[in-house]
Image (cartoon, rainbow, N blue to C red):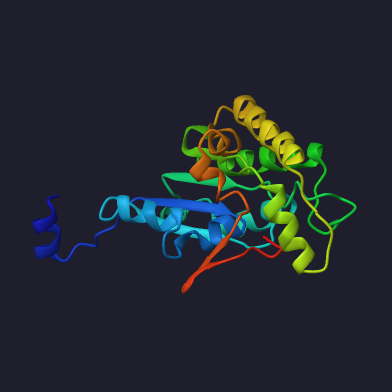
Length: 212
């Protein structure tokens, strides 16, 4: 049915939906200049981009809430694609941030569990996009930690291990994957963003060292 026909007969106009699922990097991505806002702008009148980012979350908590976001049997709950963007909190150092730290083996299992859940609600692997955690500028991050009265609680080398694990999960599960950890380190301008800032409505606010 043509657009003009749909309007004239009063039919509902529904766009395909893209669901962005992740931590604070996703939650705040719709702020001015954010990657989610840019994606929504690119897809305007083509696809509704839904932000389902949860600041502070790791994959252990994410896999629990995912079934409350997408359910089987409801066409409105079935997006055409889902991004899964976790790992920055999971890779926090256990001794410095035990609340958010997730062991690498569990991180892998949690990612696979989420992919399998989506498959169980009729969202196949071909419609799932995993995104690796981005790199970390340790110098800038350590300054933020000191300001907050804590020690450096993340290392880029450790984040890289989780990024590699994410790539392996994508290969094992047959999903697409975006390797931000590698791509951002190849571009100096992108690497400047690696302190993982939060965009606010009035500009950019630095990420809290213990919560993403």
